Amino acid sequence: MIGLEELIRLQKAGQPMEKYAALTFDDGYADFLQLARPSLTAALSPCTVFIATGFTGSAFWWEEVSELMAPRQGVEAPLVVDFGGSDRQTFTDLDGADGATSATRAICYRMKAGDQEQIRAVLEQIRGWARDRTSNDSGGRPLAADEIALLSTDDLIEVGAHTVSHGCLGDMAPHDQQTEIERSRATLESIIGEPVKTFSYPNGSYSEETPEIVRQAGFNCACTSRQATYRSGDDCFLIPRVWVPDVGGPAFEKWLSKWIRIKS
Image 1 (tube, rainbow, N blue to C red):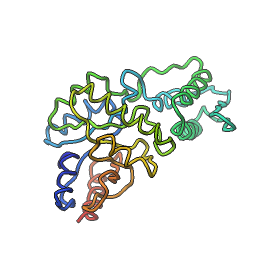
Image 2 (image 1 turned 30 degrees about the horizontal axis):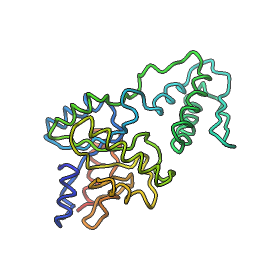
Image 3 (image 1 turned 180 degrees about the vertical axis):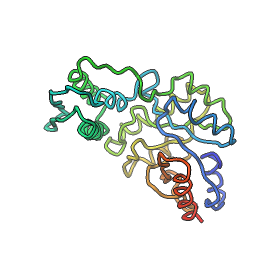
Image 4 (image 1 turned 135 degrees about the vertical axis):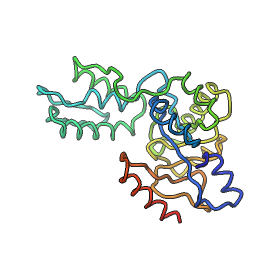
């Protein structure tokens, strides 16, 4: 296990990638401090935490949507959501787990492509429908600025950028992409007091221009959401990753052995 920046350095030096692995965590959830960091520290395992800076001091919008949409008995009124333009949808059967889960996924899928104003508008509609239900931050909380600063003091942890809004860069104009990318880096550098050199594309979304925008912004590499192993000749601004399933014990060992065989 090595850090992401070390992985890139070794690749540029012509080293084979097959014997190395780097851990990354997207978004910047605060529970990383309690659930992941102690185990990683005990194992002396480095990692990179990519942080969407627009959520420091606030909540992830997708967590609020999930909480407000959680199934509850007695929900009779359908939820009508205007996503803008002619995109308007009605959701029913929200008192059961299947209906609520399906609606939540559909709403979050559409919100990913929206700008901040559109996201706020949809949230207000859902809050109005939920009426007596309010978000109590029981879901995943983002890291606060002081927690990000604390992470940066750990020699095993790299802090990386993940845009400001966690929006889909592939749906944005190049100028807006540049703003999202550069502002996220500037905010993180003001918090940790050192250069931020790694980047991750939110939702795995990028356009043909995005990797060059990231490079021009001064980053050394960028991670995608494409499922694959990283090879010696791969573009370091389009690094694929292997997404870890939510399983443990023998099931995790079986999953991991599959990828080890692929790498070897």
